[in-house]
Image (cartoon, rainbow over all chains, first blue to last red; front, side, top):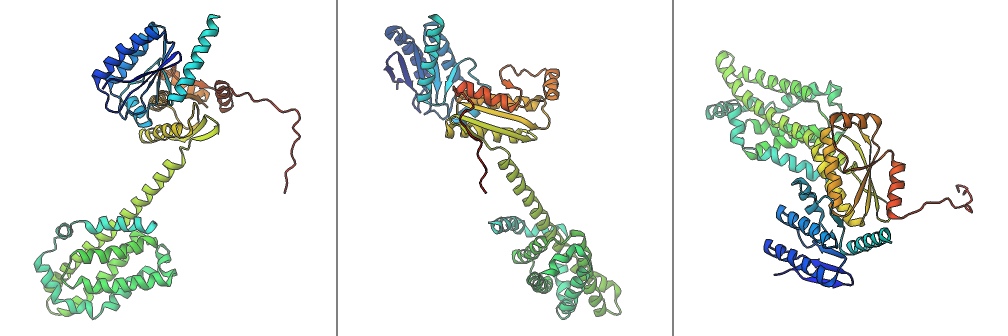
Length: 124
Length: 316
């Protein structure tokens, strides 16, 4: 099942479901990249709170996704990593360095808004 | 609750294979039949044997607690009497071990010293030996053989009692370890979205894991955005400990929380540099005060003195 992508103002929200497959993640990468261009979005929140496991493939895909979207002009926040998932990721050495993270969707949106505002100031 | 624990420790001693216990002391069917032959020497003089045990025990302050409490002493005497009868009953099964373990638990509860117990137990065996010798006035080898058989049971008994005493002590250690683990890693909410984690003592892998796990759940529960981790109380920071700290910081970051580490003493800082530990990913601030200020800055708090504030008098 493809990952649903919601548009909220200038921000896109992608909410990963429990049974997300590797194929879905690759599809998400294409979809988001495409929509960021189409809607001229400035930010993306990827909500992973439903996931109770994040393997190296998922982590790498999300990292690539964030970096690709940055090149397309959108900041990405990964939101809602569960405590046990975070713990397991660190044990496996999957750290998501340089990627913005947030506690949940709400925090992610706040963080993104703040980041974008900061960016505006630096331009103006 | 304490009783539940005691019972479960006892249970593990009781559940241990009885046949194996018999093998340890080489208790054979011929021993059992010899014991049956001298049953009378033990049963008829049970009180005398028990007295030998308790009067010897009473001399030592290491066993004083047992004699201070009348209930405990009555129970011990009662169990000891039962034990003497069971010793020659020929049936050394689960019930036998259970009876012994109960007595062992009583010794453990009253803090009877193992060495003193062993001395007193020898007196008991000695007392039995004398009565056994009387049964064979003209046949010393037979007396010795019979005595050796019941002695095997005695050694099996000692095995059970020592098992109980060790198991009880290990349980105490486990309970204390757990208490230390739980006590020493609280994540405290200082302000909205701000947690403080004081770490005290030694950081080993188990504790570091537990600490990280506890912190991650606290971050979620308190919706924390910044965590100030104070390691003033950590005795020594080496490569291992530093890596644990980096893991904790990284895991918290994955959940969207920023960690500020404070309280690195100058010795610790210098030794970390000397060890070549890369702490560049960790945001460090000299002391707890500095860390709190940094955290407040990140969260957008501004602490200003209120000029109109009048020092409050403490009411009694």
